[in-house]
Length: 295
Image (cartoon, rainbow, N blue to C red; front, side, top):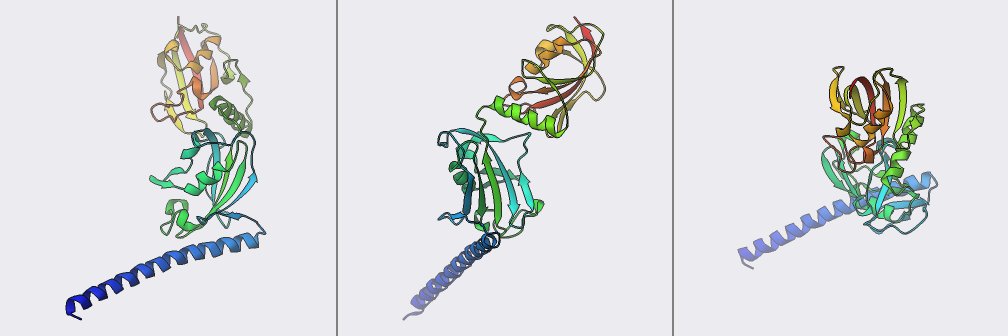
């Protein structure tokens, strides 16, 4: 056997050994994950189904209605936890995410895009109003790198609590978000026929606001999670009421000097598209003072 042939054979054997070693390492991670998950299930007396991809899941409540398709819009919830119970990331019940069912596997965490196929696949097994628990082995979750900002360690198995809301329309979700927000903050608001809710903290005695009025206002706008997106910062600004978002038209029921808090459904604010940092389908929370009215 000449030197060239010997060198080629050696190279082939070396490559095969390295590939086999890498494959064994990868398989060992999967087997370690699987053993850890099975130990967790046994210790907690839990029975889950195992998918051929290696994740485990349990349908807690199947939900009702039609079988959902990837092109169907859904509003959903998730809570990511370690197997020890530490909450890593979760949705808010006052800013409920919604998308097409086929897109529910897409996440942006710490400016990194992730695709968690098991999440979409388990949600696909649910109908509206259903919920499930998923356990993703590390190789289907955040892998060997983890996510330090969320305290997710290397090769961490992740438990995800999943649900699909029974509400199908955005205005129904808006109502649910407002109910949740007001209840959590012990607030009582009046519901206008327009679906805007409001709390008057000071009744004005000045000029009546008309739909065509120009108003001098102090205001602060927030999302329901408390994020402030706009404010006059104590310096009144002049606005034509007819040129503002639809939800503000309720101000024509009041007079100069009024101080009011408005909770505005998303379709009466900036709708699906959002605006200037305001996300799509966002319910808005405004504190407004009507300083003066120009008719």
